[in-house]
Amino acid sequence: MTKTFLLSITTPEKQFYNGPAESLVITSHDGEKGIWPGHLSMVVALAIAPVRFKVAGQWKLAALTGGFARVRSDRVIILADTAEWPEEIEINRALSAEKRAEERLQTRLSRVEYLRSRIALERAHLRLTVKGK
Image (cartoon, rainbow, N blue to C red; front, top):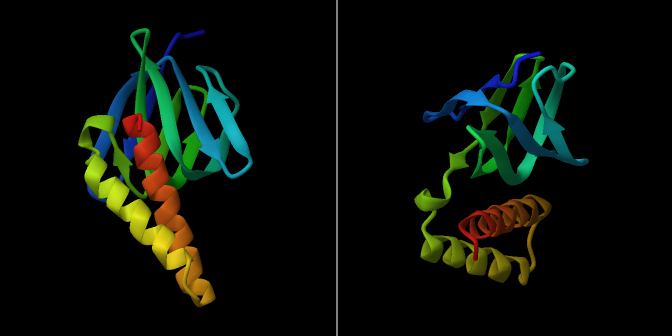
């Protein structure tokens, strides 16, 4: 059994990561899932959450704002809405987005506006979590 699998994380704008991984932790709408080489095949809808993967014994952390993962025994392909490394996240921008979303949620909103505001708040919280704030 091999000790790594190929991990590919792609967004509509860029190839975020493409290389070997020893393990991967993704979050679906029903919780976290750990992936290792030789894992059973599955397709997972991803939540707005951090993704962690180990490369050469070191854990890497990134923010994923949803998408899908296709898991096979030797490869995982993630098609994400967005993906950001912690160093790409602007803390002031994330804090401002969090504040705006919280303020919108305090007003009377249509169902669509409410859902958009909740998603914006989730994304802001994700960025702050990945940034370590």
